[in-house]
Image 1 (tube, rainbow, N blue to C red):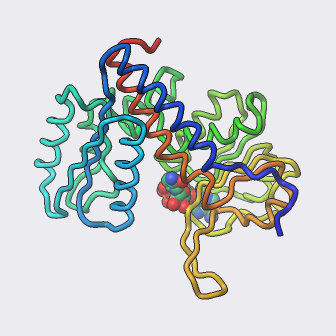
Image 2: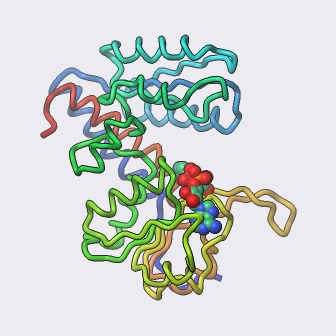
Image 3: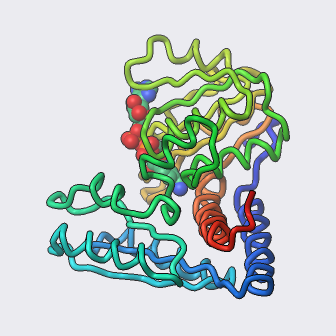
Length: 293
Ligand code: NAD
């Protein structure tokens, strides 16, 4: 049974973000004759990545942007991939470049990310964007963390002064999320696999962001009453009925009884990632148009 917490509807919020992007894309076309273009590069046949890339393409087109997909075989050489990135860097009609991760083992992902023009790095993984985010300069911000911030702000528009905990310190989620929370004026704890007494750390937090990658790891009795809980985790588990289902990193039913607001899985953070990717592509294109201050 659901508890008292407000359920944060990530699907609805993502739809609003995409609608705003579509309006802004139309304005950019009118004012500057620019159609934002996103190129997605996928290497190999990983089924999850294929589905994800297909969704990105559909939603990019639906927002009025140009979508280009480059499918390369798993055996492609690092050099060939770097050459393609170079071509996309130079292409005037492409404003955002995303190389779908993970890449095959023979390719150095860091090298590929660093080859992307930072102004077209819509994943926000290039060291220039990582650095700019950390010094509070304008940057292309990683999509999933950006989505988490939007969701938290739907509950509390100013997060200033809150005690926040991020569980997980990965480069794609935990670390950028911590930077965004700092920039929003939170007092931030970053917990990870070596953290001592994690439940006690979580109990102090007004805002809990879980990006651990372990099903239902954060328990309800760790949550401070009234806290905002944003669950980044997407874990496939076998349910009691023998069917596969998705669960988050937070034990939802328990936490929903204590929290003030919580994101479900699925339908929470997940849909925000592509919406924020579209926003980044628009921002990259606007940068070219020179009308972003
Ligand atoms: P990761 O494996 O790179 O990082 C996990 C982090 O959790 C590590 O920093 C580790 O220190 C920490 N951790 C592991 N065990 C811990 C423990 N016992 N106590 C405290 N911390 C612990 O994972 P990631 O890429 O950051 O992804 C995290 C989760 O978010 C996964 O479930 C992933 O599927 C999900 N994810 C969702 C989206 C999305 O919604 N679109 C995007 C990216 C990741």
